[in-house]
Amino acid sequence: MLDRSLNPENKAFPLFAAPGGAPVGWAVSTGYVPYPAAVAAMEARAAAIADGTAGELVWLLEHPPLYTAGVSSKPVDLIAPDRFPVFESGRGGQFTYHGPGQRVAYVMLDLTRRGRDVRAFVAALEAWIIEALAAFNVTGEMREGRVGVWVERKGPGWSREDKIAAIGVKLRRWVSFNGISLNVEQDLEHFSGIVPCGQTEHGVTSLVDLGLPVTMDEADEALRASFTRVFGPVENAPSPLAEEGN
Image 1 (cartoon, rainbow, N blue to C red):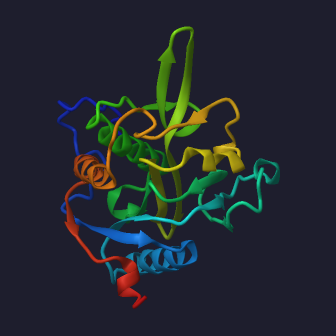
Image 2 (image 1 turned 30 degrees about the vertical axis):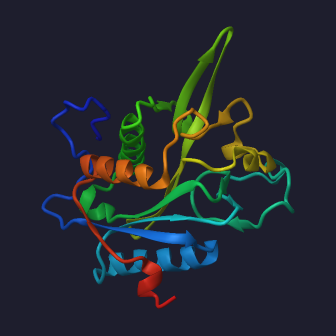
Image 3 (image 1 turned 45 degrees about the vertical axis):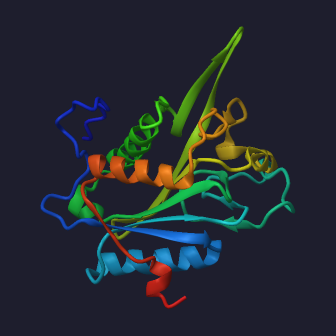
């Protein structure tokens, strides 16, 4: 089982590496990638990984404004169905929002090589995000029964927990796809068209909302550094859209 200690002095890092494996490809797309094109490219790459004809890949991108419905989504949680396009998604979870200023990372890893432990994999994704947030002196936390990463916020006479990153993954032939989303600098009001991840008692936040003027490039740098600590080395790779000829 995954060692969930996040102490930087912990010598167990990387936590979810593939023994003796090649570096994971690290691709970053510029511009806004349409959701259907991203799903098609991601699923094709995941199939190629399972077939042994392509290497593992993490793909960073931004989407235009949209909502996605996970396999546990409830129609009542879609408050404004005509606001943005809504797409059915095979990932776990409920409704979420993607849009400009949010970093989406699609994670295509071969869990056969890394240990077929889904709970450990999700915990490793959480650890990855928490390590990245620590680069900005933000304390991200996990909560029992609530997948994702949360930030505790306090003021005179009040306190609350806001979600700063979401996790939704799917496995096919023990290769993962979909992944994580980190709120960097997007318009948080766009979340008001849904009940995010079915959570009515908690809000959402972003790095900029927390008062940190973090750019997307800076967030990417932190994500890359923390990924290597949790999953192992990476190397630059082309976008799977480029591979598909799109």
